[in-house]
Length: 224
Image 1 (spheres, one colour):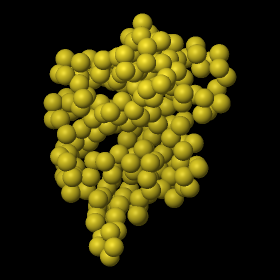
Image 2 (image 1 turned 30 degrees about the vertical axis):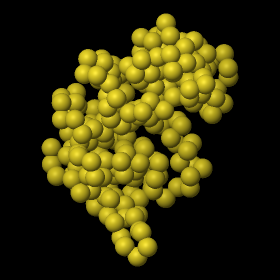
Image 3 (image 1 turned 60 degrees about the horizontal axis):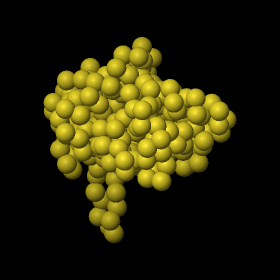
């Protein structure tokens, strides 16, 4: 399997006045195509910073991050936003759907930024809603959907531009256990279909879905 993401000696140090606060301390991570990786750690372990680094939402203080052999650790925001739009699909705990748009329109939105023609946007969004078993709610807005339904729409949206990597940040955090299992089963099925999944979680029970588990503490991996 080819390597799709590689972090090497990644540090992230925040400065508050003259005080340095290390959030990541020499993170190394190699992600292969079709991996299902879980990064687990308690609050304050550096999970959010790791998420931002992996997802090209932030640049490291030092170290390199290669996405398909392209070093993204020093790119300007304009380039990073293009990469995020095409290569990485994000799923968040809070769903982050736009409340004034229907489920269909939410899924179509990422394709609009990539200048996909409207007819293709509609066709693909409908197929993705069908894939995530929420097509019967295509015309509903988020406020008319349950938490589980909103997360299915969010997963469909993450798949809109056919990204190589799905980055899921506590995707079951706001769901009951039964609905959470359904969402994790869906992510596992997407992984079987060829998607690379990176799961950020504090829930040890979710790591059973992964083929690789990394434990994060004080900005460092401490073994699987």
